[in-house]
Length: 288
Length: 288
Image (cartoon, rainbow over all chains, first blue to last red; front, side):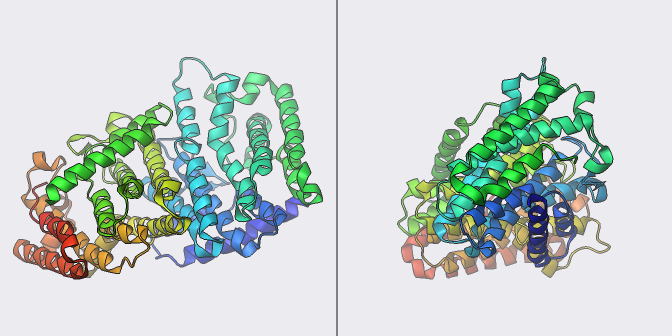
């Protein structure tokens, strides 16, 4: 159920990107924007669309913030891959943007995708002004210096810290770096219906943490070819991860526990939450 | 009149930055954000506040988008100064962010300032949801791949182009790179009052172009110490500018003509437009 839905939603989001990016001037930067938004799991966009379905929100409205959050995620990856950040030459099995073009184009394409996220969340098609202003404000809070960028800053600081991070520090880092946007994505469906996003956000908090632990496990156990990126970078860099702190078995047990917590948060939604519960279980069983 | 108002508004915006940035976690990135927002003319923030006054909008509301547009401008400067972009080591008479910290911190601080701009425009204090959604959407349109970033992309493309830009190409480049945000700033006061932003945008279009021509003149005639940045970079790089295309005298005449056009657009505002008219005249007489 979940895998089919994820694939369908990914295709729908791709179509929307083609529409939106196809309308821009044809320069290197817009070509790099298209390139950076291709591929990937599109888990965040799926969370927006699926939570919208659970609230009977029309997909023609939800597709805008779903594409917006994927634009924001793509910007963060393009900037993260830069030589002055994580210095990655491979992403989703292809050269990173600064390798295919150059660093200046990567900085600008990331910047333009970042702006695009806010444009897509505030377009008239999304809904009433109340909903659009709420989506934009909460997206800014989730992605800026109190959210994602704070997580990235803590990550950079950890590299030069005298001692490896503790479990509570790495949990805080993850809550910012990947958790805040996953939480926003799952809550977006409720926001689009002006309903309470709390249960979906609780689901997403547990899911986000499980996702990161699964990523750390994949970094140790995974297959670089399937993952489409270099693995065991963290271990080589001597960085603390959930696996290095908990050990492989306890990390797997913790991820499994979090998936149960995520599912429990959605009890109130009844059968309509089945796909999201399936998604949570998938997160810890994936191989890429 | 204009100089005093500009200085007062700059101080008011600084106070707002202190409030907003002081609430963030104290990490390198937030220190770099504060540093990047200090100094500067704050012309864009002034345009928001002054156009708000002309529409009897409370300054306690207008201060948020005024600070927001200065955050967005600061992000664009931090990224523009990066080695992979303009490679500047000096800005407003001080080391650029990547010189004082490092490139990774500069990328992240710029990203966080970018997000902050959208947060400040959509905060509840700004006004009704209609106004906040409108400010966010128009800011995204002005700053993304159809606006500022497009201008920056055209600027980069021009560096490797076989022949220097023509007057119409350089005018299009400027309209994106600096014009779009100046236009948004001047229109913001009308948007805050849900009034027609057209006359203010027309004023700002002429002002923005005059400002760029004045910048090109300063690059040739100016004093590097007063400007707080390196000069004659364009000439050394063989880049087309309004001065290289028109000649110094015709560039000055064109700037003066544009100032008249800018002032004429505000006729309907009567005496309340005096400070903005003064601002337009100042733009072509400044020495930094």
